[in-house]
Length: 534
Image (cartoon, rainbow, N blue to C red; front, side, top):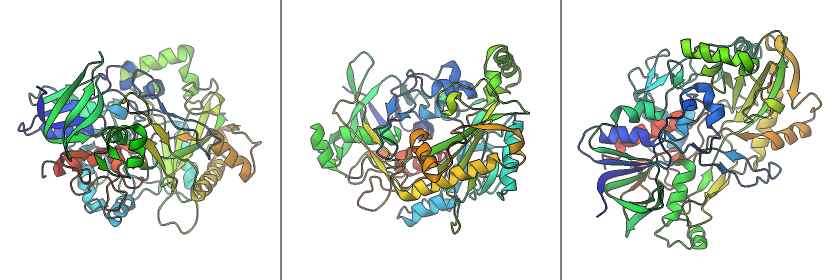
């Protein structure tokens, strides 16, 4: 007979680890967690600079890529998602960014009652253990450690000062709800090491007798009895299949790709899509897999004079020295996240809040292209930007009834003119920064895309040809009350079904203004109160 648990959580990532902790805390409920990946023992997971090693590692990654983008020269883009305990929270870039208060007030205005900034702030505070910031908006006693940078770089300080020279204020805490300004990023680290959802929520509770974590298993479908979810069928690594029963709820925490994919394979989604798969329709919900949103980033880089960067520390004997330095005091190259400094800026007059997020690293990549994981040998720096709330939307669509087959991921980057105009303005701003003191004092020359790229058309061609994901997919099972909503905002239940809930980044109805880990963590904290209540 299949084993029965009160709750079955599918996915041990940013949301699943939170729910495993909170739902098993009373000891009254049996909780099972299914994870397709294995333990988070890889050495580069804990080392912050290991991001460049882990983010594309096939042993830790689902290995997704986007469908050819009609507005980005038909390119496919690598789309990493964590396949390991901790999910993408074990391979991401460490940055802790809540977003703007207006993001969550917009959710409430869209019909998501209980999701305004005032409503969600207590859950942000409950989650975090932060030194610094105002007590009114920051948490002190949570499980998620948030650190300031341990070893700020001279070039990062120059970048912040250049933003100030262009009129952008230096902000003491961009996570207070008002983001506008420039700053050094806060990081999800503890003592210079990655602090993942496993570290914060899961590892401390693995000895609870009412919790069972099952790694290396692929969820194939949610099992239904009529309109009620009763369990999950999964495949083991040896090819065998098993089913677990849920007496209360199946909770999907697979993220914005895997959650809609599993729903579709289980017969929940657009009937036309399900019929193409040969999957029987359990429940028609056309919004499953739609409303896909992601941040699309563009970058420029320059070689540096008069200062060092992280580039030259990444080779030869200098790298050996950095390894020793990190081992002794957790500082230097290996303690660095992909982005060190940044800002939030308005690209045109009349905007109420910033529409562009900025990124800076005192490093540059071979050939200028971010994601090569190989740094230049000469000193360099990289400046980037992504539009905060893109109008372009896409979809996630199962292409086969086989759970092991990858779904189609179509973000539709730059489909909307508003998005193209915003990125063009952002690229011009990045070049202004490179020409502004004190940053300009360290610029030898721009090497990507290079000074030969001048006109608006040439800059947009650069954006189409070289822009990339920032790994922030959301929205494919959105909360709401409109016909395309998938999840009830008051209970996290899949609309029209019993015993099935979703709590991860896929429920965001619109994009938050920044990196998505903090918001996903908050969603799970809030869901952990909503789920036991009914």
